[in-house]
Image: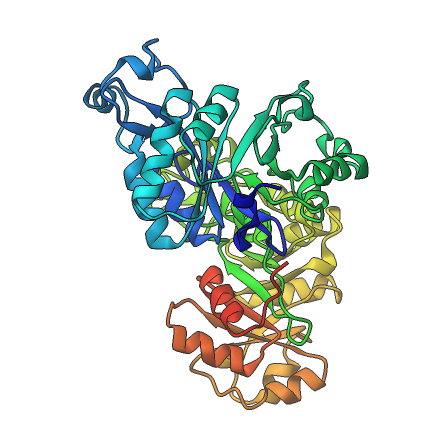
Length: 481
């Protein structure tokens, strides 16, 4: 193994999370927003695609040509800005500055081999210590060696190419095999034994499938790329306290609330629950949306319940949050139940206008009875649910009752919700009696999170799950997988 590879950060205890073009599932690829979101999601490094303009500016952009056919190498930075929407082709210098501010490493995918030495110089001049320089073109690796670049070099390997035939003097093998059905089958014991014998480490393709990722994260690899960087090393709490984290309307600070993207982010990060709100459409279908009207979070207007599912599915449910989500649709309850099943996740279902029996029947159809709990401001809906089934796990709020006994007696609840303003002295009693305790908090005050953590509830329903996870990690309450 080369001397450069002996640095401590290159021997992590679990695969490094390398955000592919930033958190490109949630923001424009290779944009400052994508890199910032990746940092918020806990990525260890950002994969950045790099080209050089005619006037020598190194920029983050994937393709070698523009939509009009011009090569990036043949246009100036000014011409590039005129040709592209705002936020694209960010100067590499700005990305480096953000990486230093967020303490994130850089995995540079050098698309134009002629800028390889310049990329290395920029990183050195700005004092970056955690960087890996990668390329498909072996000329880039040779240029880095000739420039005495101090950073590890990685060779990107296409499908159908023997990685050991092209590794040369690079330090890292990076198979780009995401298009294959089961690329993990090629990463057998013999593959890693040969890597060890050659002193080479391995970084893997961008992976977004939770089942495949579960196999990959247990392999002896340096890092894994992903459009969803939170999926690489999901949050895992210490066995002494394993709270279930309910993401209020999903990971609603990363993606539009109550959408599949918000649910993907919540589950892929390792959080247990996606909290959703369910309405009924004019034609009797069930959709996930918070407000009774469409105006706030879609490009529609008026009452949701007056529209058919077909009409609702034509709406844009994401642009209000970010242009990146312009294709986001109002999900059906079936789609969210399927999403939860994909991750083995759970749901907190709040009835809005949706009838209890219709919702329960869909939950049963998906076999999710044990992985959902229910609540509603409409008490009669909860009574209807309990009338249909004794199996449903119903939540009740402590603030809605005068005494604790009244709270416990109402509809045989499975859990009781407290706010930060309620007295918490009954937690131990309830937990010993088999009732789960949940604290609901939609704020972002670290002192309040400290108090919640000290109280050790069974569940938390929060708007800031990643902040909660960071504070828990700082207290040694999570495991660094």
